[in-house]
Image (cartoon, rainbow, N blue to C red):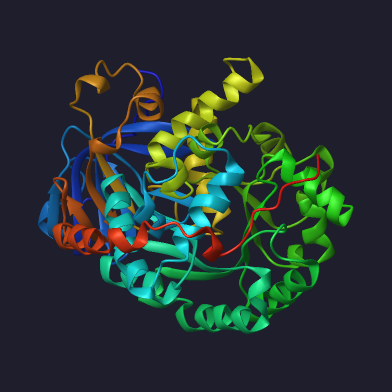
Length: 462
């Protein structure tokens, strides 16, 4: 079958391993062979602490050495999915901003709605989002939102992994910026190393050069990076040229933002000159294609970015634009959107899509120990059921993964060596209670008073 690996004869020197914590038994495994993704059939995965220690054909590892085992027969083990850009607690507003232009989406819906939020709302909203992500096979997400202590607390309790940036607007001033610095310092390496903090100014169109320069200086002092929206639409590029005489990346460069690692969300309006600038700095791009399609924002130059050696990962954005936190869906839509835009069905083939989803996601978050099932890597593993009608026949399991897999196929989720879900049962989240807490807040949260909006989305002069 296409994409399958064969193994050499068993090595008797590795049959008797020292005790380890968890053994996943008899699953097919998505592996990386050089630059190509393959399927290793009928394997066991041994985990000790928070690391993968061995991946071998079934029968080569003594199950008696494992403290616990998971029967993974007929399942497909993939690395934990990486959501490289989201606003997790926006699940609080799912379905409240449908079929409207982007300017109204921000000014009449999102920022008025978000003005209702209180810290405890963010805690419960993040728990709901984490439950959805775990159910969808996501083990790591990069969050860009508010009240981040509550986000960090939710992450700490649930066992998931996250990169958190406290979103701040330029008009909130340096006092608010320094509050986000305090958060970044307080939680860096928190939750047993599962939390990484970033600085997170909202965007070049809502943060001026001086504010961005101050943000970059603080990020450099902290030894962290910057997660920021950039060139989300071509209209934003026009606005930047009108207001500042440079494109949004040019503005970030002028402010010294590229002196630290940067994760840019979206980049639809990136120009060839922008890409030439970005490739000379430590910059990665997150792609959230469902949002782009839904808000008619355009298509990002993904192939040009990759050709320039710029890491590209997949994100979901917030659910008010994407409706779900399903990275499998975004993976599929990324391929389809790029093919349609190029009018070329050979664009972004399966191997490239997998590379973006796994290696690209790990590179975007500067987390080389993620995105691969291999000895020494962090033990973030997802088991997909493959017994659904939509997964059969299995001529090409890689094609099935990209174009057929659903979030509901996710059976078991392991993050940092801990089982967070098994048999579709969440083990670290009381979902009925979370839903009840969110429901109790809905009437207050869904009010839209536009005079109270957090910010104003700028529109270029016609």
